[in-house]
Every structure is written in C-alpha cells, then in structure tokens.
Length: 267
Image (cartoon, helix red, strand yellow):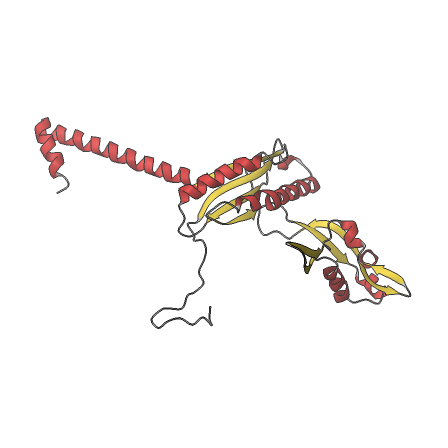
C-alpha cells in the first residue's frame, strides 16, 4: 500500500483491525461427557485435555471460521499437541553432528512441494510431491547424513515423542476441572444477531460429527444478552409508567387530572 499512487486529495489507506473489542459475540466450551478432571491422575488429565484441544483446533474451529461474518475463532485451555524432537547433545557429539543439521534435515523432509502442471488436451493435471510426516516413526526415520555408507537418522541423536506446547492459560467449567473454551469474533460492521445465529446453527451441525463422548455447550451468546437487555428496558419503562400514573392519581385524586398530568409531564 505504501507504493500505491492515488489521485490528489485522497488519503492513503491504512491497515486496521478486522474486529473490535465488542466483536466477541460467542463462547462455548468443549468437555468430555461424564468426565471429572478433578478425580483423575495428571497424566490422564493431560491426555484427555490434549485430545479435546486437538478436536477443537482441527474439527470445530475450521468449520466455524467458514461462517459468514466471522473474523476468527480463538482457543483457550487444554494442551496444544506437538510432535517433539528432543535432541541429546552427547549423541550429537558421538556422530559429529551439529544441532542445525538435525533441524535442516527435519525441515527438508517434512514439506509438500508443488511441481507445476501437465496439460493434456483440455485437461490440466497438478503435480505435487507429498512429503509431510504424519506419525512419530516417520520423524524418527528421517536421514540426517551418512557415515561410511551407514545412514544416521533422527532416532540416533534424539528422542521423538508426543508432547504439548507450553500453555499460557487454563479454563475451568462446572466445578469439574478444566475444559477447552472457544471464542468467536465477528468482523467489524457485521450484524451480531445474524453472525451469532449462524454460529449457533453451524455448531449444531458440527456436534453430529464429533465423537460420542465429546460435549459442546454454548456459555455466552451476544443475541441472548441483547434480548435480555431489551426486555429489561421494556419492563422498566412499563413499570415506571405505571408508577407515575399511580403517584399522579394518588396526589390529584381523579383520572381526568391524571391524564392532563401525564401529558404535561415530559414538558
């Protein structure tokens, strides 16, 4: 945008946020049915919370982001799953390798590569090489280098295992320990009723595709909050009007004077 040439008198466009502080319109929690995290071991708690966070990040979240008017869907709580390569310095020295060599080997053997396209008549075929690793054994089997014709693999210098990212927050719900919280944000200028209603409908569709023991519950809905506020204002105005009528009738003593009093009250 800094190089765009604009006619005189037109301000140069600037980047701005896609959502505001008031864009947080939808909250829901992901839990496991009949599961009380306060009564299990730490290992079991971590395993189950990692499973719930993975389901949210890879199943629920991507589908909710397709809803029209949604800016983003954030995740809180749980443990974000990672495949961790824990390099042993002593084994590195034994094989005369550097840390960067291991990192470069893993990066080079964990990517998809595009190969252009092949045209055949009116058809076009895309060519790409699929090299993403999908499990621990594939990561362990990545070759770093060779010594005297013998390949040195990642498993020779590191322990490869499943772990989780260092987390920066936790969520509890219902007095049963931790849960995973999802937060839906709408785009700036969108109608909150329409976006929230669409999110609720989409969430109901997603529930049918989840494992039987996974429970998703809405805990905050901007539409319900707005409706409650409107109902409260309507109720207060009605009760306030009745109170004014009752007070005027009590002091003036007749309905005709009360009518004149209520008409002149706003003045």
